[in-house]
Length: 242
Length: 202
Image (cartoon, rainbow over all chains, first blue to last red; front, side, top):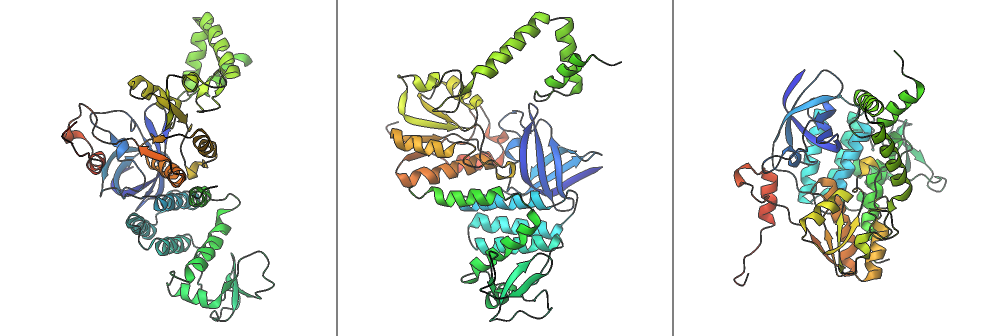
């Protein structure tokens, strides 16, 4: 099988043997893939492919091979790399960890691929960051088949009431609850949920949307926590004098 | 044909080396046993002493047999400057260039959430304490210009700048003897953003 000039992003790479790289890619039409970049770290006149094979740069990759692990045959830049700085760089690492953890190999998701590109662009501009992260998380849940509607009570099938309180449950989505008997799981106000369903993730709803999606993703991530989230938390805390 | 148990054992053991598969491991084993038994004994004892004696330097985390490595205990070096690097091989490269006379701190990796490597795993909390305690004047960040290396550099910058420590990043750009025509776009873009103004006196 030979695939030419497939739009792709690198999610993760690690050195392999003396001069090669093991690459984890997210491609437009072939989903998440593993490739071997033979000799990708080898020194060549004035630079090598290694400078192209970085996360967050839009690439066109060609690869071939019959086995699960394909070989990278050519790579070129589709656009200049997106320069993520500071907190946005850590958010980018979070996106990559989510994709590596939740996507199955060879499962094409063109919609998610486009959304990933848009999210990276807003991270590079450092504008509208949290809203675009939330949009990405919703899209990711949707393509994985874990879609839920924040405006519908998953148990009763009725619309969420603005003055009610709700909890997230993996099987049903949002379920009505008593605010004081909620236990340790986070509780969401109906008004916030309606705003989130209308695509409003800014201002007062920002924290609620973040907590809701964290809950929704946590049930699919299993027991292992996301390292990038921990890293982000420590990054925010590191600047403050101890 | 089946090899004897200790022979199979040796083949299996050699496979822990990077880039050595079953075939190469078998070739190495047969060579050592057939042709170079002395070399095999030397290898065995060298491995044993190295593993037993070599540990991380308590200051810079580089490999050493002493509690504090030779570079860290050298009084002729500039003790006001620390250069942060990813691997011991990087230390060797910088030392060979002969352009730096300060101290080092070796991370033994870089921040990489997908591999589960966080600030604690690469000793950043210890590093912060050391920089504050010893009153270091400047920290030079020489992590690799990869996404993970940049993330590590950002993390360190954010950790040290608010505490009033001077932080600098090594330059990225066109290699010496290179030709612009053959330099890739990303590197060229870096070279342009990191350009330097020329002054009359220099």
